[in-house]
Image 1 (tube, rainbow, N blue to C red):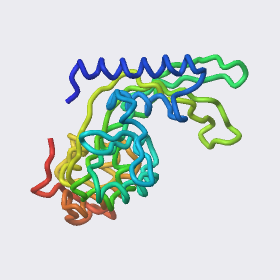
Image 2: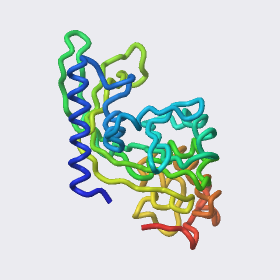
Image 3: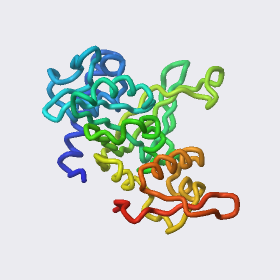
Image 4: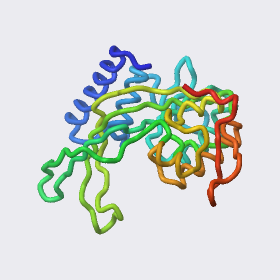
Amino acid sequence: MITEERRRDFLSARDEILASEKASGGIGVLNERTLHASIKLFLEPSSLCREVPVGKRTADIVGEDGVIEIQTGGFEKLIPKLREFLPEVRVTVVLPIAQRRRVWWISENDGSVSGGRKSPVTGTPFSAFGELCKIREFLGSENLTVRVMFFDVDDYRIPDKKHSRRGSVRYDRVPSSLNDEILISSPEELALLLPENLPREFTSADLGRLGKVNRNTAGRALLLLTGFGITERIGKRGRAYLYRLSKDAKTV
């Protein structure tokens, strides 16, 4: 649970990052975006503990609790580091989830900013599985903790219909609030990411709808959860496989 004091501390860290970006005329440090840089400063105020060489690689943070790696997306990029770090040291992987977003548009002509509309896309705890499935081989390690942090963000985008299928590219994400977090220290605790209103029996389509992810992500998550004994396949409903939580699943 995030206290109000910690929420204020995070916003102070964000404001410091924004001030440094404004002073330098660019975004962040070491090509980091604002969300990533704000989390790093929030979790480790000392610059001596950030961007520290560990073996042949560089860790985001090294402190008393081991290595902290902040990955805003693309968890497959973490695999080489996890293979090197986990046998030697405790590793916490931080995954930011944007619960609510406001979308702003940056003009290609003059750099002006417009918009600020609320996005219909929302992030949920179950959204974390989209990335966690990519590091499935490491989730049983005693040295690994996953820290899922939930934010409201301002999403700044540049129209680009020529090079992007979505018609735009992201320029930056600026967090407007830190809402909550969930710590996953064992495979059994992955159940904490499941939707609270999950029925006793469900299909991957049910799980995707309640967790607000696509059906493919829900299906991959179910393979992971069933492999760890959190869910179990119990039959079929029509052409779809039917699942339920196992008796030992740790849910809230």
